[in-house]
Image (cartoon, rainbow over all chains, first blue to last red; front, top):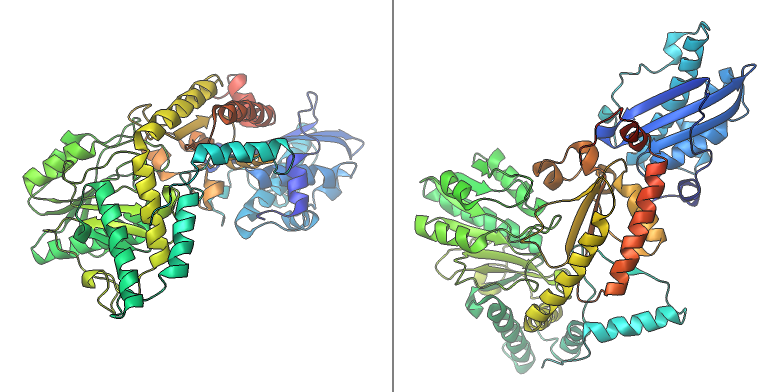
Length: 143
Length: 420
């Protein structure tokens, strides 16, 4: 089997799919040319992520990592969500094939991009090095 | 020694009976370009060969000579299906080996005469493309014929590309991904007239389309056993008698010194039986399978912003290949598998590489659309009922994936332009 049972579960029954029309932060990462785009919507109240939704164009692991990332940050304070790493997503999914690891990187970046959008909209100061530069071309990552 | 047993239709009926009884899960195999189920006849011939003709065909005593007789019969059978002579057939380990040997041999022999130019297409199988690329690194000049959205090469382009130093023209008979059939007879006639060696990779065509190497002026042709219900790990290379062939596996004098190694007789006999069986039913299967294909193309054409890849005709009888905008192929395949449909895709994720299918890119599909490709390859073992089930499953899965795709949303909102 290519994927763990957990990956297949999150792929077949993705959690938190959809959009939040009045989202406080929206992040979109990836590139259709490379075959995956993730869009993350956050609803934030008093610094807590009260709701999160995602839309993904991509392979099975792209959908599963998006789903898992939303689960890992839902109900968490924003600054805690900011510490989410792609390794945490991979571990929570019981692993990913090596050439699919970039999907977990995208999931981490999508969360960060949405938080950055929230900070920007609300003029909240932040350390730019906490965020991936949005021009980063994930195509150059090892597949 | 050939057993004519129950045909594919009967076996399919039996399988469907078991599915109805709940003894088999509902599964529709629609990836016959990847491999086919070994036919009952091929399986029996293989077992029979193992049981009775296990001698080494090179041995002089009767065990060996009986095996040699089976080997010769298999050679005659394969030759008969291609309109060739038995001494023009070389058994190999498969289509890839046949392609490698044909191309490298023609190139090296050409080089001895000062010819260092090879003509091919950008949509060849990797067994051809990677071999040609390797020769390019060794100093050969390669012309890739122009390709448009039809997926069919133009004979005029071949004519324009041929030079005095052209050592080889290699053009596949039919494409493995998009099923388009190339004008082989006309390219063959042209190459014969110009005195250039012509090779065709007929792995997808053999047993499915009528082939006559004499009529079509083919100098070398590769085929593979498991694409027409024979076993895998075995193939054949046809080489016209007057065309020399170099050997790449050194050892014994098997295959008239062109391919050393004790013959894989059960596989060779099984392949010959399967090819004979396929050729005996070629018209009947062509008619039946192309009717399934046409129904599948018509059914899938109802999905908006999807498009058939490659010209609708001339096309392999079982090949259907679509791109659906706004979705990615691997997730499409996995969800189709959950619904019992086995298919294939040209997306980067399914190939394990960075780029989507080189064939889809060559016919002008942009990357983002090529990622959303779906290949369904049918065969006489499939039924119209299965085609209807496939259409329903694909529609459902494409809708579902589009609903969660930000690319599709952007297309619908007009933030991104539809390509197809």
